[in-house]
Amino acid sequence: MALFGTSMNNKAIAAREDGLDTAQELEQFLAGVERRAFRMAQLATGNTDDALDLVQDAMFKLARQYAVRAPQEWGPLFYQILQSGIRDAYRRSRVRNRWRVWFNSDDAEDDPLLNLPDTDSPGPEQRMVNGQAMNALEIALKRLPLRQQQVFLLRVWEGLDTAQTARAMGCTQGSVKTHYSRAVHTLRTLMEEHHV
Amino acid sequence: MNNERDNEFLEAAKSTLDAGARNLDARILARLRVARGQAHDAAERRPAWFASHWVIPGAAVSTALVMAVAGLLWLSSPTDELTVVGEDSSLIAADENVDIYDDLEFYRWLADENDAA
Image 1 (spheres, each protein chain N blue to C red):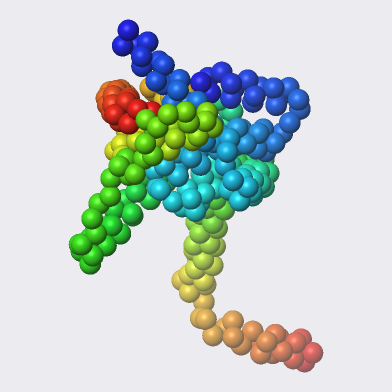
Image 2 (cartoon, rainbow over the protein chains, first blue to last red):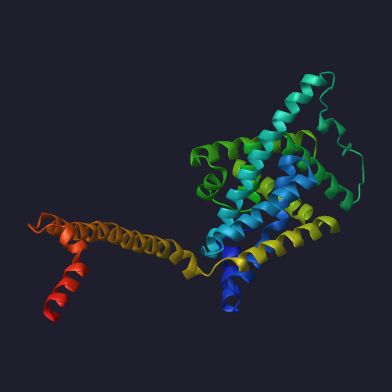
């Protein structure tokens, strides 16, 4: 796992030993997290451009307001800013969707998992299997409630501990544990149901 | 057993997510690079550490000094007026006729004429 307590700190310390200034250190840090941050935002919003805007905004705010903080604080702070942006975007999209439902109530809700390719077919190439696993996981993640989805990603992928995740998400550690446990259970069930 | 299955699942999920992050297309990577560059510029443009920490106390001290000077001026100006008023009042309260000051030149001339005679 890409733990902030280990790998990111080590990178920051190495950067400092290399004689890099704060701006360069920060750029190294951002280069290390940007892809995961983008994917998290993309999974949350379902929109590539919105996700890019959210990551750009989080990077800029971190640089403007928190560059002077110790590098080991950047990870939790960055994700705190990003999560705040994701929550705002989510609220806006809910309002938009409510209006859309009012004006276009005939839209049937598609179940994306029903559109998954049949993985029981014999002899798929490994690349295809990996691609299917990715699609299935992505679709399953999108089906999770936002908080469960983001807690799962922060804990499993970004390697934040419970306290750091709680801070980033703006909730209690108890909530983080509950969301995480439910997310793991739901994801495993969904993935097993679809033989991935 | 359950923990073992959980760990296997979590490892698989993480690998899958990592693979997805590695395979981002060029347009997205370019946008991320631009965003990172802007953040780098913003971090460089930030005021120096000492400045950001001393600007507020410095401004507070400056304001306090300006207010202190203004207060001193405010308090000192009525005193001057009182002094002037005090000087005027001694003239007014004097037994001599005030007209004598207005005609001082005439009395001097009169005295000179008397001396000459």
